[in-house]
Amino acid sequence: MLCYICGTAAVRLFEKHDYWICECPRCRHRLCEIEPEAEHAQRIYDDGYFLEGRAGYPDYLGEAKLLIKHGERYGRLLSRYMQAGRVLDVGAAAGFILRGLYNTGWVGMGIEPNARMADYGRSALGVNVQAGTLEQLSTDEQFDLVSMIQVVAHFYDIRQAFKQAAAVTKPGGCWLIETWDKDSFVARMLGPSWHEYSPPSVLHWFAPATLKALAAQYGFTEVARGKPSKWLNGAHVKSLLTYKVAGSALQRPANALLRLVPDGLPIPYPTFDLFWALYRKDAAPA
Image 1 (cartoon, rainbow, N blue to C red):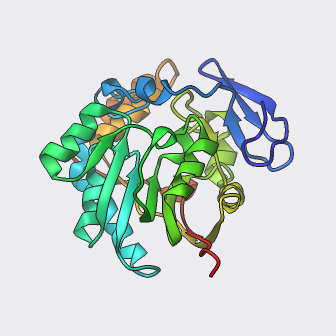
Image 2 (cartoon, rainbow, N blue to C red):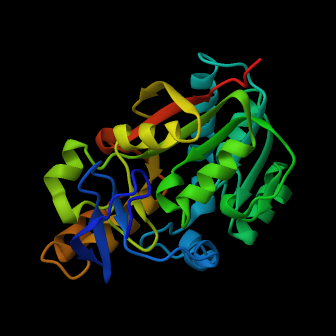
Image 3 (cartoon, rainbow, N blue to C red):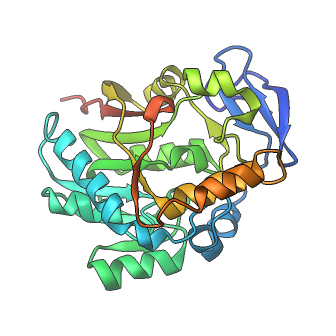
C-alpha cells in the first residue's frame, strides 16, 4: 500500500495481531496494512472499547476527573498562542476533554463514533457531542480550533479526515494534536513490543517530522510542540498491563503486584513516547 504522506509504496516490517505494520522507505511513516472502510470506527470503538478493558478502557467514565483536567491543561496551554473561540473536538468520547476546554473559555462541539459516549456527554456534562466520524462530517460551521487529542493514530481514512479538518478550520485557526511518537527512544527500544503497535485500533504511527509534513499538505504550519502531562487511574493501568503481559512469563508476578494498586489511584504516565503539536492554518490571501 502507498504511504499516506509521500505516496511511496510502503514495505512490510512485522505482524501484530494478524495485521502487517508497514513503513515508508522514503519518509519512514508507519501504517497498518488495512483497507479504509466507513464502518471501521463504529466497529472498533463500540461500548466494549470503553467498558471492557483489553486495549481500551475498563471504565472510561471513571476517568472523568483526570480527563477534564487534561482538557483544562490544554486550554491553559492554548492561551499562550491564541484566544479562546469555537472548537471542534474530534474523537470526543464522553466529552471530558471538551468539558475541560469549556472550563477555560472555549465553546463548540465534539464528534464521536460511539453513540452511547456522545449521548453521555450531552446528557451528563452539558457539552455538545454528536455521533459520527470526522471523515464523514458534514457541517457549514467554521472553527478557530480543531482538537485531535489521541485520535489521529485511529483515523481509518487519514487523508479524508485531514481534508475535512482543514475545510472546517478558519483561516488563521489551529489544529491541536496529541499522539504517540514512533521515533521516541521508548518505541525504538521496545521495537515490535511497543504497546502502541495495537492494530486494528491503532492504524498510524507518527513522528513529529511526519505529522508536520502531513499537516503542511493541508496548509498548516507548526507553531509549537512539546510533551503533555498525562494521568491514568489505577484501574486503567492494571487493565492495560494485564492485557499486554497475558500469556507471558510476566503474567503471574505482574498480576500479583497489580492487585495492590487501588483502582482510583491517579498514576502519572511517563510521556517519553508522546508529543503534542499546534499547527496554524495559513491565512487566506487578501
